[in-house]
Image (cartoon, rainbow, N blue to C red; front, top):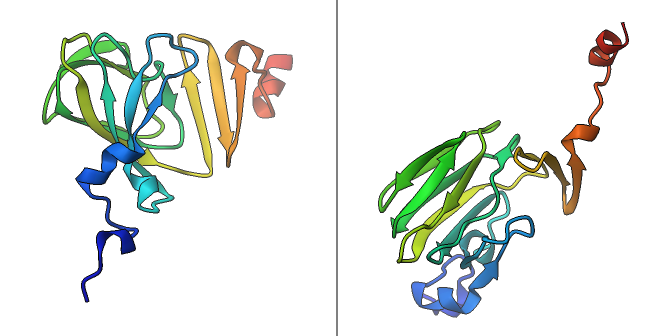
Length: 167
């Protein structure tokens, strides 16, 4: 039996995506600016994220980071960008796919061009995530909805590692 689109929470029409669009910028990167729609959340997905995103010309995604627990991916739809992956810059364009297995290497995306950089991105949404921000010397721990950030310089060895340090 056919139903109207409003009755199907699993179907998100292209014509309805603009309505749920949000903008985001990373607090540690003043050049960060992303606009997009959280497709997965809007259709009820809880264990994986799928997002339609756009970086305006001259702007960047988040901040250079690496995931320890959650895998992430990016698929370029239109525009041109620079993907920095493990310290090396790579030009990316329509049809290019980037995958970041966990634990993974640090990565970041920026748009040096004159056109918006539009892409699909997503990954796992686990109850626990650890991410490093190597250029900032920080580590983020997300446990459920709680997020804590640590300075890597404050880390101390623990257990057998500590015993070696004390010898």
